Image (cartoon, rainbow, N blue to C red; front, side, top):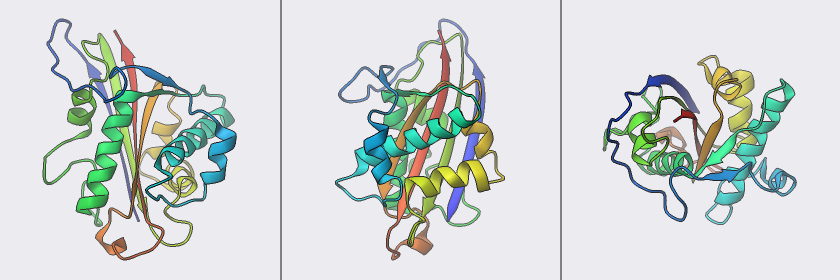
Length: 207
C-alpha cells in the first residue's frame, strides 16, 4: 500500500490573473455541501471501488473524514466541485499509470508533471485570493478490506506518520474534494482484487 500527503500555505498577490478550467456541471468554486446522506454512504464504508459506486464511495470518504473531525471537536468540511475535479483526475490517472511504488512521489504525475498546486488551481479553486492553503492526501490499497474508504481514512488518521492526521484534522482547512478510482495505483497491486485509489484535496480560501 502507498500513502502520502502534502500541505502548502500560499500567500497570493492581489491582481494576479489566474487562468483556470471549470469543473463540469457546476461553477468551479461552487459549494456542493456536506456529503449528502451519510446514513446511506455508511453502507459503502467497507466497499472497494467499482464503476457503479464511485459517487457513493466519495461521499463515504467525506462522511468518514467529518466523523473523525467531529470526534475532536472540529467542524465538517465543505465539498467544493473544483477540489472534487482535481482529486478525481489525479486518482484516475494514478490508478491507470500505477506509479505509486515505494519511494515514488504520489503527488506528481510522471507523465504530465501535474502537482497538487497545478491541479487545484487548474480546476479553478480559489481564484484571485488574498491568501489560501491547500493540502493533498493519497492512499491506495488492495486485497480484502484494504481498498475501501474506511481503510483509507483510518490510515490517514490513525496509522500514518507522514502528516496525514494533521491534514485531515486541521482546524484551518475548511474545504475538500474527493477522488476515488477502481484499482490500485501501486504496480504491486495491479493484479490484486479489491483495489482502490483515493485522493483528497483540502483547501482554505480567503478572497
